[in-house]
Length: 355
Image (cartoon, rainbow, N blue to C red; front, side, top):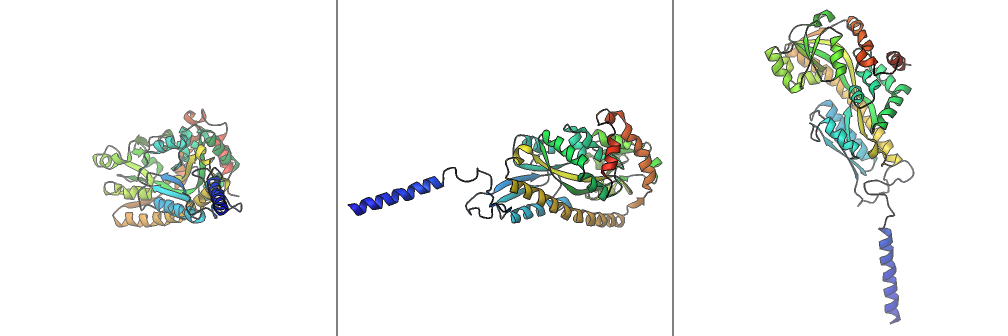
């Protein structure tokens, strides 16, 4: 009898320990404990489910940006020892940009890309200036701006609107103009109907150059070029080529009117649920993947230029100084100065100076 009692007591102790071990002592669901040495989840149980983050964007599989996003997913999986999983959704599989932003603001663990013109529409008007025409002369100026106090202040304002800017060192590409008639000087833009995205900054940017900006969905552009509804469009070279617009527009003007770098964001609500180690990993791997993206983008741009030439497109190099000079009134338009901080153009000019 004594032996049975001892066995019963011992079994009870084991069961109690097992119950206590499973009750609220670990990290909350969906998070990963730190080992205190800056490596996320190095001692995590193999049975613990990874933190899942979904990343969605409009670009199609195989494009440089898509390849770089998959590299980001690989990096964060490796550096978190598998405790963070980034699920990749190209081709608008998670919905439009606004759909994804709504998910962010609801607290979902999603990421998407956006830019200054978009942030201006989301309540941080000064951010819109980074999409102004001929603001930057080099990519180095872009990166100097993103590392400035001005940029940090704008990012803080964006966080107050519920959006956390994770990484800002991703090249999307110089935006050039493809047209049905040659554009060799800035005066050749006069009266030309150029398709632009439907936002005020890009519309006004082409107006000051003398063109007639015509907003329309990118999917309608090919037919519009064929029918003469528009005379051209603008975008980075890979977008222009992949859309096959050069089949009906044979003049490519390398005007580089916008140095288009892009940024990745998530919701502040979600970001604040992460441990400091997870936050650091998300940002650091995003920046690392950005450098990988930039190498891909620059190689793709040169390769695409050669494809254009091989397929009968006349590539026109221009003196951008006359274009830049004509763009300057953009920064004095009441459409923007009524919303921007006083002296914003001068502030940004100083902030983007390469040290």
